[in-house]
Image (tube, rainbow, N blue to C red):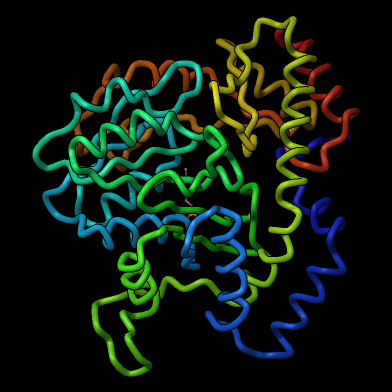
Length: 366
Ligand SMILES: *Cc1c(COP(=O)(O)O)cnc(C)c1O
């Protein structure tokens, strides 16, 4: 039997009646953009993240871009982030006219290494954008301390980490602003694109609310130059149903991660490392093997939807060639990204499916 990387059909089947009712309600009301569905979901999501405000937007990338703009970051500014991420983290920085400045990662968590941040700070640095990679919070306490000392804003890229905690605090409640993506395969996925910004700051909230909707201050008055970056009612209704199940789903992901850990302990694969004080939500379960490309090909041939997150660090992508950052610029990110391999993980995966993945993997790596 084939095993996908994520199984969105299984998730739908488990909550079909509630999703269908929510979708039908949106069509009955025929109110499709923002409105009551979005407001309800925003309220529930802010509560879930332990923040005062949540602003629904059209994607995780839009959330990052609006957060940067709300902090007045633009041309001539620099934002410190990690090269070990999905390209959208850096793209959002580039889209506001600022420059992404990369800092290498911790070799065990693959998250930004706080010890390397300070040397990257210049007079142009305005913000730090840590990414909670694979669903594990970055090491935030030292990052917060550095940001305070240098008067920098922290924008969390929490796109992979809804519900993760760091010393008991929720991902999303750790920085000045935090951004989430509801791209369908994320651990809280919409039925299309969607995103969210959360914050405790009233003024930033006000600016982002306006910017996501053409800069509107009233229907015909546009107080600033804005965008069409709104969350729609259909996505909010679906997400609100799913949010109720998220803790249970994240717990299931953690259980599956422990099962993989145990079954793979005797192989020579490098397993995920959960840092002290972190509760990761395993949006992705990634191992490392020096024979990654062979192993991936064999798993795929056996019908297992293994994948790579991500094949290239951001500074090595053609889109960022103009930064002139050659091979060896961020050696830990570069070497670990040559050997990472993501295994199937989703709440509904069964013990038997995990055993099948491990069995096939064991044949490949011995
Ligand atoms: C998914 C993701 C994004 C972008 O989210 P979209 O909703 O696809 O725009 C940004 N950063 C990270 C780390 C992501 O995983």
